[in-house]
Image (cartoon, rainbow over the protein chains, first blue to last red):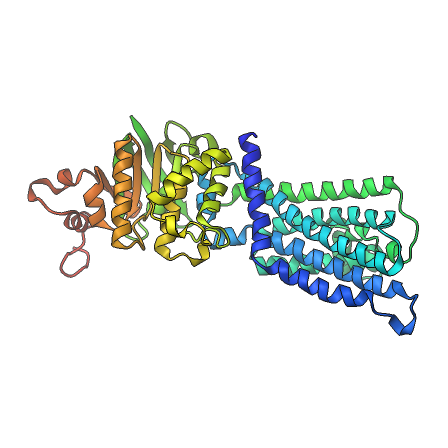
Length: 260
Length: 245
């Protein structure tokens, strides 16, 4: 293995260990299990066939927990290094700042995706037990697009972690994530209805903020609609990669200029 | 051969001139103590030696290269004043992490860890997470990570802070042993007695500028004073009252 690969691997491994040894993830998994399992055995309004309500709730929780994990890991990547002063021995090693950034990002992403895989596996099993359909294609597509969501959210968290404290970053990124998931699609129509300063702000948000609603296939999954075309999936993935690359490029610029 | 070379280095933070025209050279195989009161510019100088930032004026050269380049830093070991490291790792995992950053393979890291952990007195605590370590134990872990890749130059920021007498003796022995191996050690300290015991030369800094540099014997002159007296005299402090003379 080349030294650069060893450096990136060491940094990534640290981010994964950070997530799994800090016990936060255990809380999320336990909470997820406690909420998801009874949901799937619950018959809403006494109707045994009304599984879409429970599916919708379960998917909402999967999205919520995955966003919490993705942002939770990435938002504190650098603030903890600054607070504990471990940034000094880290940067004194023969490693470039670009490598540090890449390693930390890949580690945070790996940690977040591993948690996401567990959530989808749990959802797939529980939905299979209840409905008798095991891991349909639309579930795989939902997972694939959800990974693209994690790529964007983790990059956003990492960018904020270079400029803000962990809690401020988590709050801002959390608000942006929820806001874009809920209102992202409606931003142009909302902007058009506003008077001038508000209109500009909403249009700016429409162009700058990540359109996280692109990655959300919950409705299709819940209503058992047909899968989306793979071309659309590819385009959405490309959008995620470009957005994450822009965030990482900006983060690299900030990190390069940062004085310790 | 000069391992560290600073020529007319100036570094300012806003209106404060943290380092003001500092020129200094450290020779190969010597132990140099870098002394000064709080805010004298010691840590800022060390950060420039590690390439954390560049000076506004002057030149910094370490091991014949630019410390901002990772290749130069591959031959430098650094221990910060107080680092709390990663609380969820044990010392072996910490060394594996830093070994990876140095580009070392797993076998090399394990061999070095086997040698270093007993050397810094952490054998009994090798499997415990770092969050259970005392400040002195964290300092020992810091020494181990600094020595991991067998550097030619060791830069230590206040290495004796928080160490108990036994650990101080062990660290002193490690530093002297490194000199025996031809390594260069540059450390900042407030512990004048330790500096006097092990340093070949000391450099005394005041308000970012070098006010004195040489062996303790040279600086003492005919008076035969100890380093504490020399330090107070050079900084212009009245030993009895503690005020400026």
